[in-house]
Length: 258
Image (cartoon, rainbow, N blue to C red; front, side, top):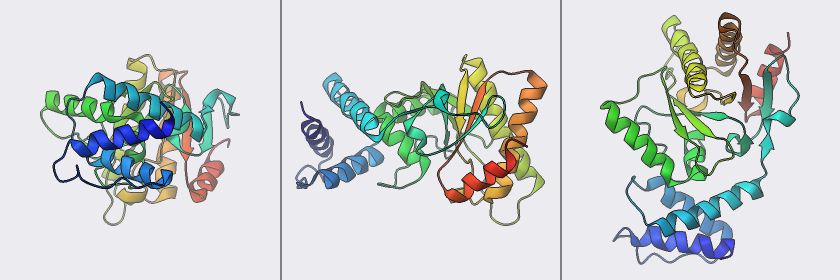
């Protein structure tokens, strides 16, 4: 199958799963089809699918990820020993684990084509990721606490694992409690990575953006927590600070290497 044929198969399968969508006309243009497919991934609740669907989905997503371009963190130049800075799409980074800024449901973003990192990671990992998160939450029996971390496979992403953490949501001035919760996110992810034998981890800018933590203050907590963890534990884990916005790139550049 060509990439276009795989995409059309996936779209038609997902439309036929739901009575209200099964007669929807599939757009002819490839980019519009990609947006529709992403929307269908985003809104789909976790449930079983045939092996054929998973095989075609995996082939499709792995090729899409390849076409986006994959960056191996080991090709980067460290800012300081064991600490790297990289600007780009975290879902295209080849590293032991990438960190997902999740919500307390831990099921990914259900808003079609939303630009948050949670949406991006779940889209390009494949539907298996939402099912894996659902299984974790069923076993846990309650929503995820702020500052904790959960590990899942990364499925079709170039990383090996995804570590999910829920950061604090800021409604006004940042409090000491919220600082501690954000630090706990970073430390919990590092501890979870090492428990799973993961040798490298890429952090997104946890709690910034949709959760309104000021970018500069969040970066200070992130860098200090990682440095403290490495000193206190003697950890040799490689850490990548992944940024997407230019403002975050400049903030991290000013903090690292000093």
